[in-house]
Image 1 (tube, one colour):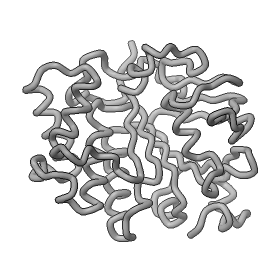
Image 2 (cartoon, one colour; image 1 turned 90 degrees about the vertical axis):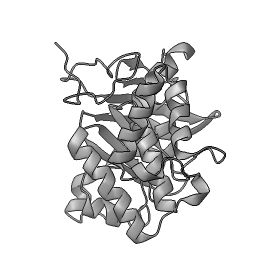
Image 3 (cartoon, one colour; image 1 turned 120 degrees about the vertical axis):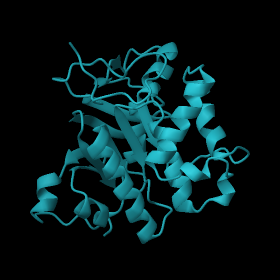
Image 4 (cartoon, helix red, strand yellow; image 1 turned 90 degrees about the horizontal axis):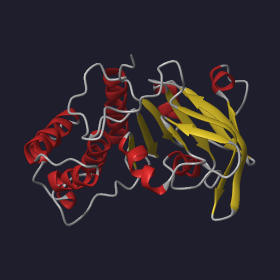
Length: 262
């Protein structure tokens, strides 16, 4: 019988306990996919797999297609060529009504936080729970408290976003991404708007979540220091292609400075 990646779901979402894809299969699998944004071909023949509990970095120049890959994985951009699957969903044949079900098992963290400025921290989280099918108000409040505790912001529930520092706002964004115990976390430059010390705190938090709850995490970053400090697989977007450069970086066989500043 399939067992969820989380040893125990803290508060499972109303509509299920995560992807039911076999543990033997990757959570993310693309084969020969063209990444297209508004009829513009961004990357061609993209192939990679991400297994449960893996940490993967997407690197490359601005505009090289990193964020477009994330948008493809959450079905914001359609797949028209190749094969693509995330969890239980075939991205090439996914129906519009299935996209919210896919996204319930994805946690997304943005560079610019994307918090609702006119709502408290707790109300930002409650908005997501309402949108993803939760109904029991008591359980919803308990879940908000749990995820805020996970990111060390339990006392900030009634603060407005503008009353928080940039690092605190990003912690709220991470808490929001964790609400439904996602099997996959997609993070688009999660430290891009933060100073070095705060960025290190955010990465430490994400690694704590990674080690404790074992989601697959895909991080878009330009920061070579983060990759050196928190090693994972590294995929490079360059010249319209995607290739893995993990071994080349670790052995210094390539100089990725042009694509990934230190």
